[in-house]
Length: 150
Image 1 (cartoon, rainbow, N blue to C red):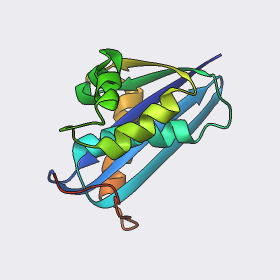
Image 2 (cartoon, rainbow, N blue to C red; image 1 turned 90 degrees about the vertical axis):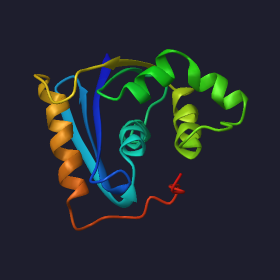
Image 3 (tube, rainbow, N blue to C red; image 1 turned 30 degrees about the vertical axis):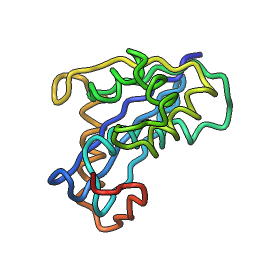
């Protein structure tokens, strides 16, 4: 069975308060997750949504399709840039802490990304946007410890 994950990130200002949202579909089971951060960027939240969703999984070697409206995330993985960045120690790249976390998760599963148009007719992408923006606007914001302000 294929696990489908929809993800989105948001930041109020870039940088500023931010959040992510994700919806996971496994057969008839649907789970939503989100979290807000005090000070972060949109790209970090786009990637954090993916990481948080995959980190929840208790099994390995799953077939996963991740739908994201982030060309930054989708292209970095699907075009293979990430693997070259990792070999070079992420030199000159933003968000190396998150890319390293993602790469470890990527090795445990068969993950494919599909880009979807944001703020369009995709029900689940729109739901992730709602989750991400609500998290960014929420009261329980935590620190994005890896954000260095670059």
